[in-house]
Every structure is written in C-alpha cells, then in structure tokens.
Length: 171
Ligand code: IMP
Ligand code: MG
Image (tube, rainbow, N blue to C red; front, side, top):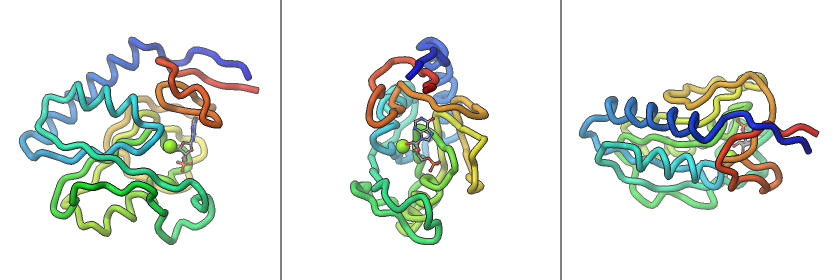
C-alpha cells in the first residue's frame, strides 16, 4: 500500500481550531452534549473538545459495523450507547468521515428516538463521491471528492489510526 501525505498536522490543527470557534459561537451557553463516534473520531474529538471555549458535556457511541450497507430502513445496533440522557438537549454528533452517508444516517435515526431537542453533525472529512444518502452536515473539517484516507483516527483494517497526519492510501 502506498501512503502519501494529504493533510498535515498544522493544517489539521488550524482547521480544528476554526471549527471549535464556529461551534462555540453557535452554541453559546446552551451546554450541548458532544458525542464522539468510536473509534474513528477519537483524536479529532479530543482535539476539538479541548479547543472549545464552551460549557459542554461529552459522551460516546459505537455502532456495530455489520448490516449497515444494505438496510437503510432500520436502526443500527449501538454497541455503546450514550449514557447522558439526550432528551431535550442540543446534541452534536462528531464523526470521522462521511462517505456513502449510511452510517451517519442510521446513527441519527437511532439517536432521534431519545428525543433530543436538536441533533447536529460535525465531521472531520466530508467525502463526496460515493454519497448515496443525503446527510445534513452542519460542520466539516475538510471536503474531498474521492480517495481512501488514513491517519488521525481513520483506519484501513484497524491500521494507521494513530498517525498524527492524514494520508491517502493506494494499492
Ligand atoms: P459511510 O459510507 O458514510 O457509511 O461510511 C462508513 C464508514 O466507512 C466510515 O465511518 C469509516 O469508518 C469508513 N470509511 C469510509 N471512507 C473511509 C476512508 O477514506 N478512510 C477510512 N475509513 C473510511
Ligand atoms: Mg467510522
């Protein structure tokens, strides 16, 4: 596999800081719950939350990856549920990458059952080419057309997550 630097550490840090400012401005004193989607969003989530000048709470979800590709009608199985009650709260879901949009769509549908006041999405990478589900992305770090990316939480078969930069991966 050929790994090529795509987004540097500095570019990531700068963009995360910008996003944090934007989010802090939008939420004011509403004390949102930020929910990180495990495992891919861990580094992005940790950096983003620490850059936020905002009273907030944090929690995590994890979705079982099987059965997501075909059935967009049902709910996905959460193998880790948020523990803070979401009812009536402003919730910001933080994900690593949106590709087809299936995962995030099903996650939103599942979390909506808890009746949050609002459910928004923040994604590090908005990857456009294979999108099949229309997804309302409220905040994104970087928008890319295509390609497979690894690093800064993004994996290929659980490898490369720990890299501090983002790379393209090609056979
Ligand atoms: P979806 O197609 O939007 O449902 O994305 C499903 C999942 O595929 C994401 O949460 C990632 O875990 C994974 N994925 C999609 N594109 C990439 C990529 O470029 N690098 C690493 N993981 C990816
Ligand atoms: Mg993921």
